[in-house]
Image 1 (cartoon, helix red, strand yellow):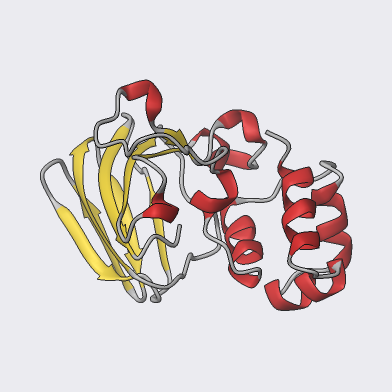
Image 2 (tube, rainbow, N blue to C red; image 1 turned 90 degrees about the vertical axis):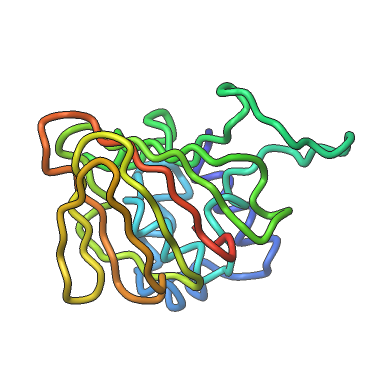
Amino acid sequence: MDIGGRLRAVRETRRLSQRDLATRAGLTSGAISLIEQNKSSPSVSSLKALLDAIPMTMSEFFAEVENTGPPQYFYGVSEFIELSPQEIGLSDAAARLSLRQLGNASEHSLQMLHENYPPGTDTGPDMLSHEGEEAGIVVSGVIEITVDDQVRVLNPGEGYLFDSRLPHRFRNIGDKECVVISACTPPTF
């Protein structure tokens, strides 16, 4: 996927200059220019900040052409939407993080994700923050979750639930892959 081209198209559709978007997102105009030219890959947290400034969710950003056929209620493994595959150029360890979304979250009030964190991966050095609430259950492996000033390591069968406006971060500190099934409402990631 052409992240830079997609960001430029969205920015121009919203009638924002690079300077406007940079100011809103807390980045420099030069950083926006490099991302749009695909000369720099944004971290998950930087991309999230850019999309929050537009405003647009990650699921909307990565959504394919909307399906105009009959409603879909069931999804095979290959029909999940990958929000952050390695191929889209996310930087550092976050590039290995997989966030697979069930359906098109922009058409629903709930966003479901199948999250996969290989050993050593995390959501980036910057804490995430967005509208909504999120919850999840660890299926396998271990994950360290920071929410505001609290840090906890969760094991299989354990879960979390918090206000997503609080700064938060996910990090696999184990030596095995960690799988989490999560939900966010409204869809904002």
